[in-house]
Image (cartoon, rainbow, N blue to C red; front, side, top):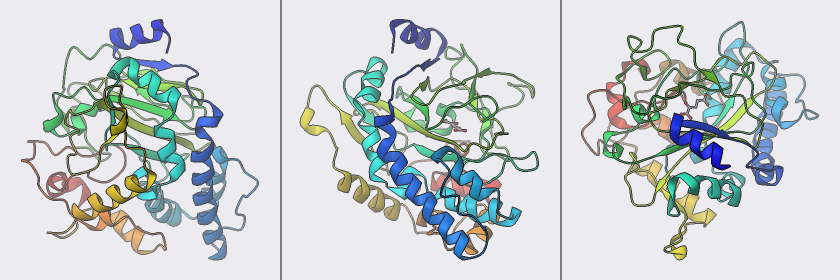
Length: 358
Ligand SMILES: O=C(O)CCC(=O)C(=O)O
């Protein structure tokens, strides 16, 4: 990023770094996720849920061409549940793993984090569907995210870690496609009180009255939105026919607590010990599968009942984590910190405490 962009990040707690990634960086991600969308479209076609698999549509539009033909029940239930399976740690696509190691991405992250870079396990791929009937389309896959600070949805063991959020769109995003909004200049205020809401954990509305407007982060594919962990942000309704595909990744200095110590963190870059870089795709898959498996059991499921009902009607391979519980590795914070916007809790403690998901 340019010196001005870096200065903007430090001064205001966020920046859009322009023209960082190229089509080459996205090519394998798009290849792999296009194949997943194609398989889902073919399955829906075979079951008679849709009449056109939209094979001629591009990556930005195909899933919506399919979704638009689905009944409300299939859209809000099955497609939402299937969308959850597209998240990085369930889909485990090689093209996604390769994107983490993009030279251009890591060179930009290094400007903030320094040369020892670890990828935090809190990360999401979000197929953010256009609204239907004026409301957000799918409850599971990528739901509408309310105002929150990422530090507010991270366990307190990581309170001292400087975790940098990097939100990157796979398509151009505008206010109409529901681009993120940020509230600048909030870093010095630190962590605000968060409370539960229908859409997940959010900043106490008493601190951010309804109607608070933020800055629209309109971006071209290839731009990166970098946010400090205390910078409030939220999603908006997607009123177009474009699927607002995005990845949100978090990076930090290697060795600092991630806030999800029971899930795998990966060293992506190291000047001090280049041999420590964990760039083996098989190991990535193996460690996620193992850690997701290990973090289940012990107690019955507590997840969104609507989502479970929907999932029970689908053929999609349901992430086991949805049917599982999580070990209470450390005392829960007073407030359960629930993942913002993915529709399910990220820790067993949060699942236990979150009535919103029961
Ligand atoms: O993509 C979205 O709509 C929400 C992203 C978000 O809240 C995050 O990256 O922390």
